[in-house]
Length: 206
Image 1 (cartoon, rainbow, N blue to C red):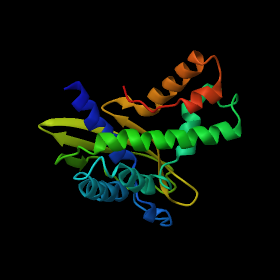
Image 2 (cartoon, helix red, strand yellow):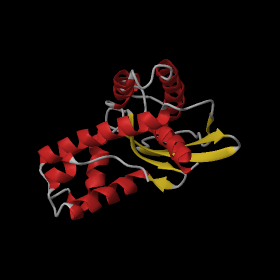
Image 3 (cartoon, helix red, strand yellow):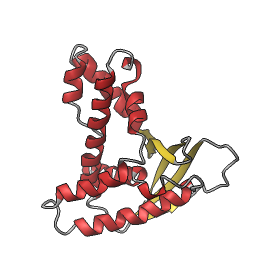
Image 4 (cartoon, rainbow, N blue to C red):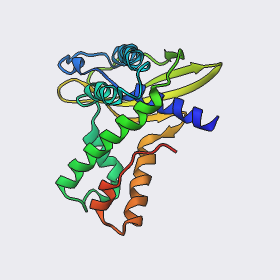
């Protein structure tokens, strides 16, 4: 039961962070509509790959990656995950970790999402944007078998006008904090060898 719960939450995490690249050039984009739209598009991707999975796993991950790469601020998230060690690693190491982090999320949460069924996903906090507003929390609930799982999207508006995901919270669990703790523990275990930490990085949700 615990495994199934986490698989469901892993899938929910992917729903949180998959936002369509087609919105990137729209300076007046609505972050609420953005999330509602991608939720439906993501369900289509799942339905197209569920039958033949895992034979088509690479194609499935590629489809997810195409949505993620220009819409989630992985460099920002990776910088926050590195936390207190950001001045101790090189620019090359930071970029490598951001890529490793992105790949880990795509694969981990893509596998959790593949078993998505007919859960209901509801947006619960739409409100007008204020002039010049640069940050936003968007909230959803996933309703499954009478249970509700609260989701919180932390988003930031860039100079281009596009809204980017910078953190996610699932059922009260702050994912950026989890990954920051994981990174810090790995640094201690590897005695400060950042190359070893990065090469051995595996995104976990526990």
